[in-house]
Length: 138
Ligand code: HEC
Image 1 (cartoon, rainbow, N blue to C red):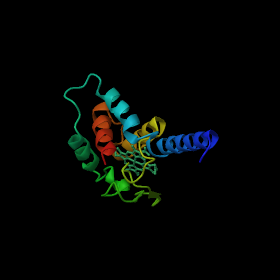
Image 2 (image 1 turned 135 degrees about the horizontal axis):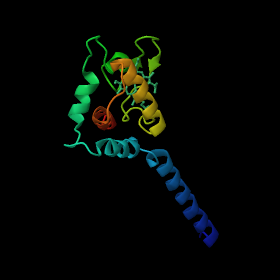
Image 3 (image 1 turned 45 degrees about the horizontal axis):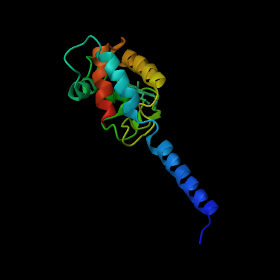
Image 4 (image 1 turned 120 degrees about the vertical axis):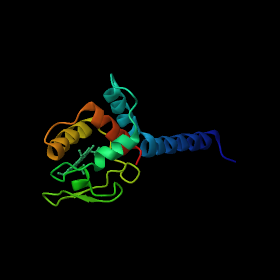
């Protein structure tokens, strides 16, 4: 029969295992960061953003033929390619790339850069909100 110490050790071990699981699988999900950002972009704007708006914005081509797909490609679940440098870009969909949309700093940095590249101006909150909402659901 196992003594009390063995039983305590077993309990402690399973607690550690459970905690590790939470850390590995559930600590930072894309929607935690992006949901907060979408809510902030929504302030003062009505009606509520929809994912469909984000999807349309993502695909809309400018007069010069640029869009978010120029580098991120046609499928968010596949690797993209930078239109100018040909550098590969990891998939954008959080469902296949768990690092996506987990850092506010990174999201802001790239939204700024990529909007300037695509539209030659910064994006508005009414553009960033729906795009983030849609991206976070992919
Ligand atoms: C000129 C090429 C290019 C275009 C066009 C482009 N992107 Fe990107 N994007 C990148 C690169 C490069 C990265 C950073 C590399 C990486 O994270 O793998 C990136 C990263 C991002 C990220 C960061 C995601 C994260 O959390 O890791 C977001 C958000 C994003 N892009 C949104 C957009 C949107 C919205 C558009 C259209 C307005 C767009 N991108 C158009 C090249 C581009």
